Length: 294
Ligand code: NAD
Image (tube, rainbow, N blue to C red; front, side, top):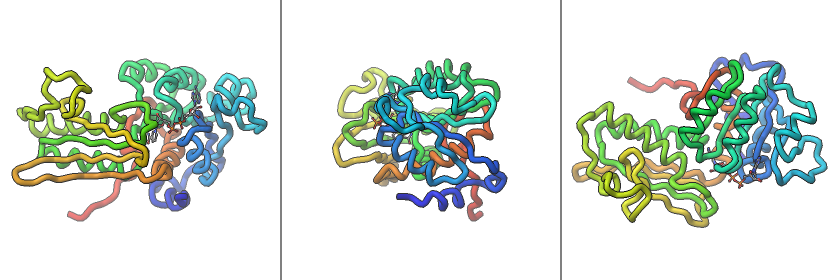
């Protein structure tokens, strides 16, 4: 189990000292799932956050006063008032229900922190319009700090080694492929590559437009970057970004060896989201900047 007080010391920027005296109320949706339970434990150990409700259809028959089957039941209980007190709604549910959950939570005035993957661009455009007043919809394809740094480092490398492929490896119960992290990495790499090298033409067979996305052993092309998805028992969440150059390769690899790896980022997002407005994608937007040597 991670020490969440260390997390706060390490990640909450200077302004963190001015965090409100009253803990921020947080609701967890998908609270009975693997990520939801880990999140509940992390929130209970975070002094600036107060877990006020757990929502999950699996909690329908729970005798606990903080357990609700759905958001309607929570609102009927009248224990949160998100339009008057900034209240965080964390979603770790399923790709097929997350959009509907947010369509309900956003107009109610919740600040939303979303880890569930699989939201389409069309959904995001629609959901952005449903944000109440100055509230925030924060989405992180990956809450692990190491994975965020992997994406940032990869953008620096692609300007010099533009031929790149991604291998992502996850547990066999993962519902979506490629992973949200792999898609986000590909989009960031493609953007950085276009900016640095506008004339670069991808030679990777998996990236040729005549090959349908998702077909064949050379992977699925996302924004001209091939992604290979492995689904096997034994894995949690892992990704390699492999750059090929003249007589050399460079690999950046990140491994989440258990779900506690995501919790520092989840806690940080719950603490910070109420300071922001509108749609924000990516934990990198909330990380404090740190000096490096010249
Ligand atoms: P899980 O299947 O263990 O849990 C999902 C839970 O959601 C279940 O308990 C289910 O009963 C509940 N649920 C279903 N419909 C619901 C609804 N309408 N309202 C509330 N709860 C509902 O899945 P998991 O492994 O916990 O993963 C959840 C999501 O988080 C997946 O999309 C996964 O890809 C994603 N994930 C994201 C990150 C990240 O860093 N962003 C990390 C790991 C997993």
